[in-house]
Amino acid sequence: MTTLDGTSQQHDLGGGFKISAPGVIGDAVLQPPAAGTTRRSGGTAIDSLLVGYELDDVAEIDLEITQLALASASRGGDEIVIEAPDLGPTVGQVMLSVDPATGLLSWHVPEGDVVRGTATRGGTQRFVLGSESLAAGAPSGTRGMLGWIGKKLLRVLVYPVTDKITGWIVDQGLSAWEARARPHGVRAFGPGAHRSKDWNALDVPAWQSLSADRALLFVHGTFSTGAGAFGALPDDIMAALSIRYSGRIAAFEHPTLSATPTENADWLAKLLEAASTNLDVDIVCHSRGGLVSRVLAERIAGASSRLKVGKVILVGVPNGGTPLADPQHMTDLLDQMTNLASGTLGAAASVGVFATGQAGDIIEAVLAVVKVLGRGLLVGASGLQSMDPKGALVRSLNEVAVDTSRYFAVCSDHEPSGTSVSALALRAFDAGMDRVFESAANDCVVPTIGMHTADKFVIAPERRVELLKADGVLHTRYFGSTSVGPRLLDLLQG
Image (spheres, rainbow, N blue to C red):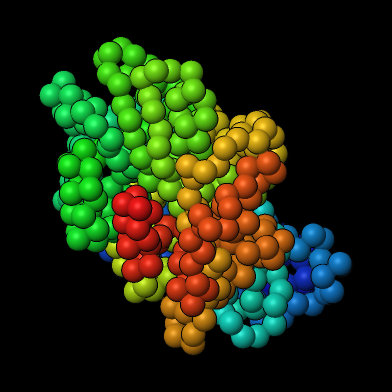
């Protein structure tokens, strides 16, 4: 056991690991990885997925903060620094921190330019955990460094630069991963099929059927897939939609990390042109999929006789962007999506999530980004950055007034309540993002006001579905909410 004495002294934990924690009094213990399937992440989904995608524990650091010895302004930026041995150029390394009180998870990647060596030359990797790291914790005690004073677990994870299972080379970036795992395509998406992760692109007869009359197109959001985003829709809702559109329902599968919404929309336009197919659609879209849908409706449909867009139901869409897409908040975005999908938020998190495979879809994509960031890269993340409020796409979509009579917005302002363990985790999770959203109403990923009002893009109040705070709808749970499905029917049938 290593005693942290409040000074800035660097302490040797053994095994090549070192820690410095100015202003912190407590203990730090380096442990070997938990044996077998016994893990301490607090999540029900994350551990099996870590193993499945070749992220293995090499060490675990138990950290217990008992007291803060210095005032905040005197603690050297509220930083705890962990140094870990570099395992060479063929191995990537990241850190996953866990708050045992809530199970909430947070990612950390090596800081800046890694001081790289080889396994024999003793290079190191440096992880900096600031006062905003591990932002959530026990809902009692003294607020301080790393969230609440108390216990923390730091898991050091390693992975091969060349994925042994898929052959994907991490240093090639996200576009290489998505070309294999999340390619463009249009698939059938009727009742039952909306929960299947396996799909084939529409063939000629299917295109002929889809284009025979007005159809319904589902467009998923970031990190997700058609089944992951919309699989929680109840069977009776999907059956009613199938009747409404005489079976003409499809989903637009597309990469969201490495391609911009404009590139997604252009791909679909080129497909229609190459197939000499006309398409007349209403659209239901989620999150970043709403930006893809707006490009289709406002730019592609106006320039091509092949596409006509009717109603567009924007669900949790960042019309005004989201601060989580700012490059400086990239790990915050990964933390949010990991906690939403991993099961750390209790039983409520599994409703319509684990059953449809959404957790796997989200975390699979998160891990691809984590691996790239762990190598000091951010190759091919233009799809994520397209949601930046200050980015070119968001600004260009909203700087010119357009007819918004075709648009409807489904919005949520998430405010957790209750005293159960999962409710306390939700409260900590929600509070952890206050600094990012500057206390503005949000669904934990997208600011609420930006779902319907962004510069000159304004959806009238009568075309907004504003979910009650009591519903507690998070960004990934709109379509499992009993409030959303019936409203989709109302809007599309009316």
